Length: 335
Ligand code: SAM
Ligand code: DTB
Ligand code: SF4
Image (cartoon, rainbow, N blue to C red):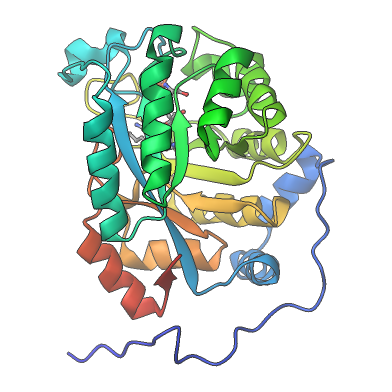
């Protein structure tokens, strides 16, 4: 079978939508539910128009993850393989903080593979000050390679945000995860407000905010809308919005949760794009079990970024050559 491919370089000039989408931070729940309720084609059409206004529809940004400290976490997030309370079930082995040299060497490989941002994640409630020197050195080392830097380390103090900013940290990832209403069904060890407070601290320190959540955890459509409402009504929209499809890890409390309809996932991406027009909306965890067609639909709905590389934090992700083959078929190029 011959597969015809297109190349972004050879394609005609990208069609831009003419009307400027309004950037709002006053979304009410009924409006968001009305977005989710729209016929899919109408929702996708609007999302794509908004997308084209601020983003090149034929470019997708590549962020690569590394787990710099795995497992043994004192929090009880029901989806997470790294909570110490789930580790007997998940069989995950906890590790200490990786050495700086190892992290920088892996970042170099990620850069050589095509990633433009390197996201370092730690299974912590919050970092200890004794780890700060290593974290600072990781940011500096990764930045020197010419990569954008991102960290996700849990809650931060003002001192820690200031030190990470000084080291050159570009982004901090801290997800609200779900709606305020559903949050207590998923996490009991820290509050929704704790998450929001950390986001404010990160923003105040001048670090770009990366915040999104997970769908497919048994939440309702109202919860998915509520999660987007929280994000879109923050004092400033997050710069990056990762939308994760739950990876149902065996041994976690959510291992047998009912799978979300893929079209509902696409609707969530489209609503995020419409509500936060300028943000980078990232098609995040869960791609390993998504078809190429579903991923393409997510890009059409406004996803402008993916997690790239064969590993997320503790679970697999598609191999680079598989992603590059998909991009070729779609005429998409990495950014
Ligand atoms: N411990 C830090 C924290 O929770 O902020 C940083 C790392 S934590 C693993 C980062 C994010 O990954 C979580 O907030 C969650 O949104 C996402 N995540 C974790 N496990 C997941 C899973 N099984 N499926 C989908 N997303 C997941
Ligand atoms: C985000 O929103 N998703 C990433 C990143 N930020 C840190 C993590 C996904 C983790 C998926 C499950 C795992 O590999 O452990
Ligand atoms: Fe810990 Fe983060 Fe996993 Fe929650 S999501 S258990 S805070 S590593």
